[in-house]
Length: 387
Image (cartoon, one colour):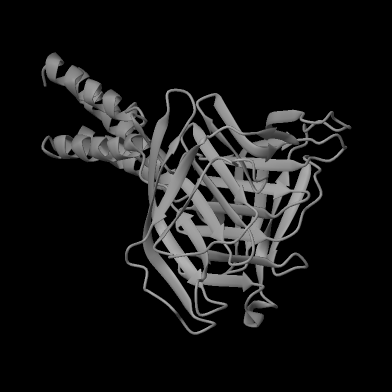
């Protein structure tokens, strides 16, 4: 094999390994959740690579479930609040962190044209309806965003329903690049079957397979977000490969940033949510007496370096490292772990008014397996050339 051809293969592999994320004019939602309750509150959290937004409306949804949305502005009503952050630029609206802002931070819209029209008998549950999310963030130069997911409807009344939105991560271009790289290099090597290649390929596949199989009993969070209010409602959502958790509870929680825990049960706060792992499902919903005794698991956030003390009104503590550990009571039972950061906002007391947790993606074992496979095949090809 010529030196030029060898360099071409190496350049191809390197380009696949370092494909930059698709972060052009339109941002992609990698994780998101929304809770729209009739006569309750409305909360939305969306996030992606380098950005996130949260929205709270102290009032329930109304109108057609096929189209729901909101403006990221309060307009002087005092009922809307939230924050938008994208690549270091921040916009807050309404009462956030004890400070009022009249800024217009953008808008969002959820569209589900296939959602069945109502009214429906009370107790009806509609699940898995495809939904798209679009919107705009008024920070920095301005960013449009887009995402896809599903919406579930729970009918306490004939119409309208309570709605739960779930937005999943989309394949990252760098991961797709690794897949193409692995297949391309393996196809090239297959055409040059020699004993040295077989030995190198076997080693690479053993390395890759060994890494990929490391997802046994402990699941890993690939994306997640949680918002815990001391005086308001709390919500969280996690997703991983083949599993997910969503949780929403009325009523506040204590604001110690170093340690917080949530049980996936009805509890005393009027919680609602669902835990799903590999086809097994556990639900808890204060609207449904059948779910009253369900215990779907728990999660614990731990941030030992989170500072303690009484902080002035409006103080924001940002990017404190934290770990996540918990258990899902579905199927045989699964432990899960994750890592990320926690932010705290204070209103002049020793406990945070708001705690926001961001769980970062970690390298997926299958991706690490592709990397190992590609590197192994590169090594065997280089050794064949030297021979």
